[in-house]
Length: 401
Image (cartoon, rainbow, N blue to C red; front, top):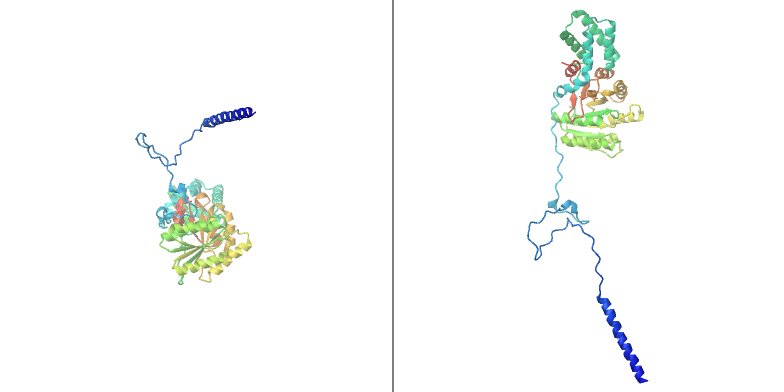
């Protein structure tokens, strides 16, 4: 019995030993590692140091990230040495205003020449019968000269042609130039008054309907005055349109003019008042006040424009109130002019986009409507394309060379 038990124990021990050998052999056997996917080189990583056995050679150029691309940890401040100082806006030196219209005459001639040439062609006919004179009238009316001014000009031309008798091209051109010049008004005072009789800056208020280029005109006028040696301050009283104040401020920065502005939708009269006050305290020569573009059909808005004028005059009387009109609107511009003149005392007219219309007769019509002269004309999109109006240069552009 004991022999049997001993034999069983030995068998168990032998079987256990054999099982351990099998398990151990299985543990030692390892599966081959899975194939690693192909990797792309990291161009942003720094080059590795050469190891023993590496062949020496020139390292291939690798893409490097700039400081701006890498960025900084959140909350970290860049080193002062790495921060570039923001360059100030360069101050431009506008060209002198004197002679600008003469320089821009070719641009004006391209749009207005048809009027003068048409009149000269009609006047050069051998027989000036009633039909011809009616054509001359139609030509003038089409150019927006206006009915009363057209009748006056035709009557004077008829009388002078009758007295003249024989008409050479040179004589006709001289005759037409003289009559058109008389119609435009060479003796009107076209000076933009910026000199205050008091010990205060000159105050110029710019008014007009939306879309006439009023804010741009104010900025260009600042350039004209700076070119003439004036220290200019701008008042952004168009608070209903945030872009208008931004636009005006940009114009001012370009010529070194300070801009006073208020909160969006703030009180325009308050901004205008602050601008005049700031101009007096800083020693400015001229304060230009850009008002919000008014629809002449909105009574409430027009009343507010009158309020701006009254508030400004608590400091000093206005030296100029310039009405900006779009020359391409023709007779509709006269309606606008009439309503504005009832609210504020217009002292001068600025005609924009005169190079974009063949109806140069609007110069004559609007002067007669308001009884005030055209003082400035816009002849393009350039910063220095606002020019003092010169009747002789204008008429010469009308009839050509």
